[in-house]
Length: 251
Image (cartoon, helix red, strand yellow):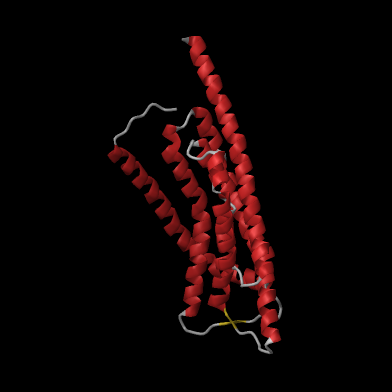
């Protein structure tokens, strides 16, 4: 651990610099996202069911679609930068070993986020579209999809799942910083389960199957996070015991 005692003002200044970097990357990501938004829209339209046709219901709607895609693309680009800046901010309070280990979390954070997006896009979202169109067919109506609302509905499902797939890594990071312990996660298990079920109900239609389809992966992620937290916490305890033993022998 680096022996650095900085006043609060210096810590706040450091945090401000880190946030500025994140904001700059996000703004640049918006530009990149706006340039490539149309390409992503065309690709996503190719993944849609053949009977789905996109419509525009106002002159401003295409611009809103561009901005929505630019925001999402920028968020994906900014995510690893934000994780790195967070790591750099807490780095002085970590040992050399902890610095090296936690730095490896960044690529895994990107991988987990992408896995969450893929799970939402290829598993959850197609099921929800089939469910919705099935209800429409049962009512004898024809679907008319506005392009902004369609993709907005998709991102409202896919993006939160991408973020939630970061949970195991966040738990590991907080455990490594000695902020979280396994017993805290165990005591909060019921509340966490309830929160996940509520989240699943919010981002899915009000039917039992879709709620279960989303709730089960979220609960599994929580249990995986608890397992990893327990494993890492025991490892940290052993490291502390070995460090204390070495210190006693040297003194």
